[in-house]
Length: 270
Image (cartoon, rainbow, N blue to C red; front, top):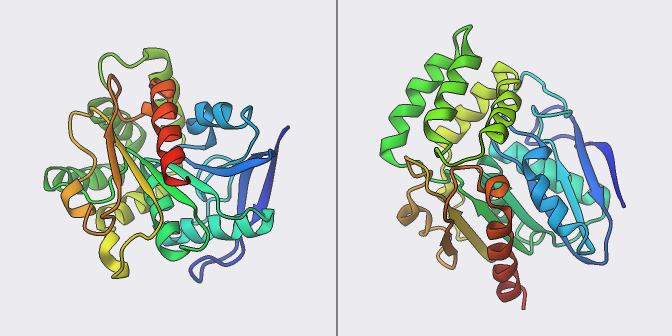
């Protein structure tokens, strides 16, 4: 049975406490934590919740701080703060060794949890996550940040997403729903998250990721991550590529994504 709730994350990275909205289903199998991406909310991981909860997994899907129904303070939105929120939420819910499945920015948060709390995560899954921005995308992000500071930031975000995050074959109704949700994100959250993503360095910890990791890329017009540089900090990562979807593969082709993740977990957690 699933239920919605919220939890006070406590201080994260020396920041003020925030309430984190989440949904939880209780089961007897390995726990799964679902983490949405930039300007999303827990509904962006709905197909994974619907896959794992009926299969008797304990599943937690949440709204990251600044998103959905969680608190939206005017503070820096760092990957470290997101990771700390999740670690504290898992402690509050008494969930041990979950599988972390993150989409986009959520995959970077899952990676950050694995680096900061290697005892907490059993495995990490990154779905088209810009862990190391390619040079071709860095300049575009700088331009996007400047444009998002203007009053028409919602239109700017919509144009950017339509241009780079979707394929012509993606479902148009779903696309509009996702764009509406993304553009509802507060401007200060959009900007801070994107600033942090632009400067995020997965090698800053000085160590390698010690938990099993799967990275699934998609067929976006511009690749999300420069994998050769990311592999230096996740040398045991398993890499895969989806077929027939843009950035939002977890919703566009859920059966394909879930099957690939399930096979990875079967091997990684054996």
